[in-house]
Length: 107
Image (cartoon, rainbow, N blue to C red; front, side, top):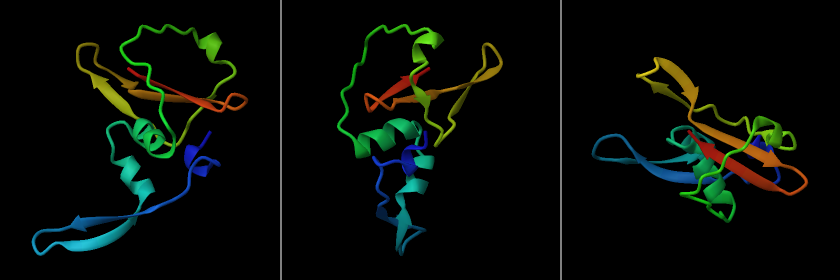
């Protein structure tokens, strides 16, 4: 599922300052804005949908329970665990088409 190619997303133009003083006012697509975020799926979904956060809760799901969910593929976020010397995905996003809900998980 590509969120940025779905019915939920509508491209926007953003204005920002670039460069040293004197700053130059530039216009850019919001797609590039999300790519530079620490948690791009969370930032994108916060901007286009009304969130219902379920935070500070223990939620354990087996991979088999995600069978009806489609993986969001707009971004790939990774983090390095120096203790285990491994790279893992930091933020996961899933979408359920029939229910029209997104599920985010941060590792």
